[in-house]
Image 1 (cartoon, rainbow, N blue to C red):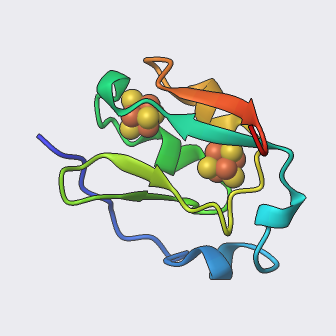
Image 2: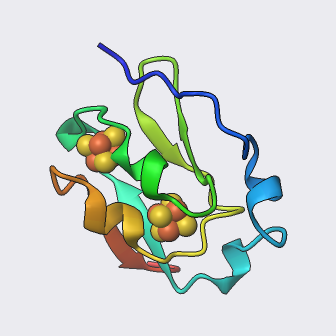
Length: 88
Ligand code: SF4
Ligand code: SF4
């Protein structure tokens, strides 16, 4: 079963932020897909709509808009998202 993204008034990351916020980041979220249960909480809590889903229902991070706040990693119920230093 895959997660269906519901309609939202903020439909694109550029509409949810002041522009490309990826350059602010010094930590970045990395998703370990084998731990992901496709619950969609990372998308739901991301303040920049920087999480999208592939055709299999797995989440992916849009690093142009992810500012590295870590909320997705904090909310992920399976520990599938780890925050790692940029450039590592
Ligand atoms: S760290 Fe996670 S919650 Fe924060 S902006 Fe990036 S994808 Fe969104
Ligand atoms: S919150 Fe975690 S388990 Fe849920 S979809 Fe995101 S990465 Fe997968």
